[in-house]
Amino acid sequence: MSQPVVVTAVFTPVEGRRDEAVAALSRGIAEVHGEPGCELYAIHDAPDGTIVMLEKWSSGEELAAHGAGEVVARMNASLAGLLQAPPVVTKLVPIPAGDEIQGAL
Image (cartoon, rainbow, N blue to C red; front, side, top):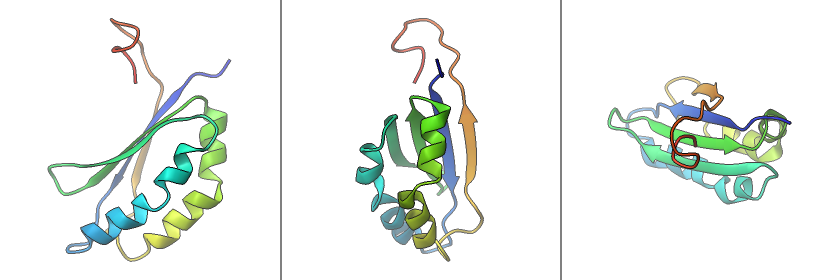
C-alpha cells in the first residue's frame, strides 16, 4: 500500500505580478480538488513574498498522475512570465508522531 505524499511548492512572483500569479494558480485549484487522491491543495502567502502551495496526495501514483495532467499543464502555461524562477518543489513523506491526526498532515 502506498504512503501519502505531502508536497510544498514555493513560487516567487516577479515584482508587481503577485496578484496575477495568485490568479493563475487559483484558476485550477477547484479542478485539482476533484482529482483522485487529492487530500489537500491550497496556496498561502509567506512573509518573504513567496506563494507556498501545500499539497497532500493519497499516494505517489496519484501525485504523478496529477503532475502529468491537463490542469497542471494549464497552470504552468498561465504562470509564464509571472515568476522569477521555476517553483521549488519538495516531496515529503510523513513521519507520524504524537497524536495520529495532529502528528501528520
